[in-house]
Length: 319
Image (cartoon, rainbow, N blue to C red):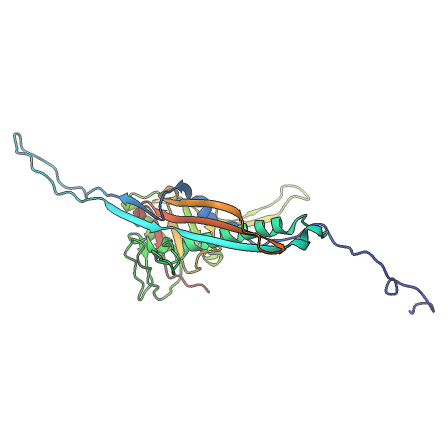
């Protein structure tokens, strides 16, 4: 088939209006499960400290009548601390933006500032979960907070070769070892160790890859077929792991994107907090040109109240 001679079609027309939706679609992940889980606490210094303590082990305790009392040796509390880290992002938009008619947003500066705030929240989540030692900082070096792996030392399943826990005070990092498969045996052993220390974990943070491994743990009964009872009924197979019940406690598996895929954390939620020195603030910057500048600034640190209540399955294979 061919067009009739001298047909005037849409390809010849001038002045056709754009067809552009008045909305911007963005499905980039923005959830931050660990940062959201942590209680936010107001702190008053760039170096925030807290203390931990522990009961002695049980012992035989029987005294004769009239026996003299004797003092027992006491262990002092442990004083720990972490430095605050400044998170800052800036956006600058030319003054011409005020006169432009745009799709999906009224003012570019407001849109970009909101976007920057979401991106910064992801940076915070990454820092909290990173295997990074604290840095005191100075006039030429930024302060850095010590991330989660640097605090966990008691209930840790290390790699088969070379894996070694950190000191546990944020001053050094976990030493990565030879990777091995994330298994139910390693997970259950870490859960038992936490229970023996008195911990009551509720949340397991792990990568999507390790989540798929966990779905295969024996005893989950996580695959079931639901068959519709009538014609037109819904036939579905559900493969889900909402909670995992062990003799040592019940935990919820939560996929997290910002942790290293080799790391699996078993956490007692109330034993972690975020110390906030400066809450997230949208700051207008000095106007030095025909433009507007805004900075989004947050300053905070991670508080690990007592690491014995949580655990770390380290050095898992990621493929």
